[in-house]
Image (cartoon, rainbow, N blue to C red):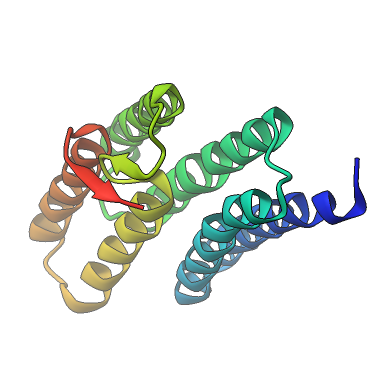
Length: 172
């Protein structure tokens, strides 16, 4: 492997470490810092593939490691963080977040089947995760009625989950 081809994978690693730091911050009570961590992870993830293609280093290994990173950071870590800050009972939050993760994995699988990678079909998981977490965080900071707050959690989770598997196209 050429030395220049290490850089895209290092950026993917930085994305993973940003996501891991984000979930740790959330569980330590630094929730806004966690949200920033998810956004930073998304920015790293946006540019690792672009750099690999620019350097001529895109590879099946890079694709697999990027998909694993997306699954862990933007599906798994975000799901754990949302369950931690949601006002809904665990018995309701857990199955909803399982659906979020399952639909996200289905979206990733569908994206890999597409021949033309110049557009996305549905909301990318790298956008869905930070958006979902941010919506619930902002709602928690501004709304104090737990009944309405719990209902909004359901609406946000259902909306973002549905948008990930929707059929609309977005230019990359």
